[in-house]
Amino acid sequence: MIARVTAGLAVAGLLLAGCADKVSGHASSAPTMPTTGSSTAGRSGGSATGGSPTAGSSSGGARPPTASSAPPTTSRLSCPNVIDLKAHLAYNCVTDAMTKASSPVWAFKLERPVDVNWTMDEGSADVTGAKGETPTAAAERMTRRMLDLLYGKPVPKTKTVQDTDISVGTAKGHLIQTLITIDPAYRKAQHLRVQQEQLWLVVLPVAPGKLSGWYTSIPDLLKAEWPNVPAVLKSLQVV
Image (cartoon, rainbow, N blue to C red; front, side):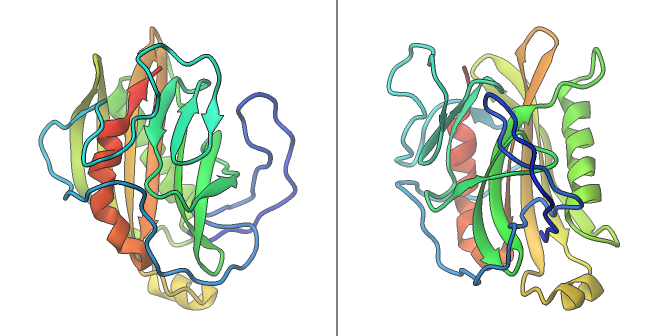
C-alpha cells in the first residue's frame, strides 16, 4: 500500500512513534528500492485453507514466540519473534527482514520495503470496540478500516479467501483473509508494480471485554511469502 506520511507523535509504552495522513497500510515513509527476494527464517510453507484453523503451536520448524510456557514479563518487539504485551499477543514474523514502523490503524507495526512507498506489513493492537462486539464483527470492522484508509482511492476490488473461526489455545477468535486488487489507475498514478496483495487479519478475545488483533499484508511482489502465513498463524499465542 502507498503512503504519504506526516510528522509523528511520540507515544509511550508499546505504541510506535508516528501517525500518518492517508497512509497506505504497507506504505513506507519515503520512496524505497523495490525488493523482490524472499527471506524467511526457519518456516516451511503451507497453503491457506478454509474451515476452522487452530493456532497456538509452532509448526514447520517455526521458532516459538517464547522460550518457556511462563507468561512473559517484558515485551519483545522485534523479529524473529514478537511479544506485544499491550495487545497480549505473541507471534512469529513472516520474515526476519522487517523493521518497526508506524500505522494509523495498528499500534505495533513491522514492515519490509517492496515497492515505491509500498511495504509488506505485520503487526498487532488492542482492537476493542463497542461493548459486546464479537471477534467476527471486530475482524470485519478492522478489515473495512484498512481497505478504506490504506489502499488509495478508489477503494480496491476485494475477494474474501477465508472468513472463518480460529482457535488460539483456548481463545476462540476469527480470521478474515482478503485478496486485494489495486485500482489500475491508482497504480499508474503512483508508479506501482504491485498489482495485488493478500491481507490476513485475526481478532481474538484476550481478556473479558478485551479484543486484540494481528495482521499481515503481503503484496504479490513477495508472493513467495504467502505460503508461510499458515505457520505464522499457528505461532499465535495469547500472553
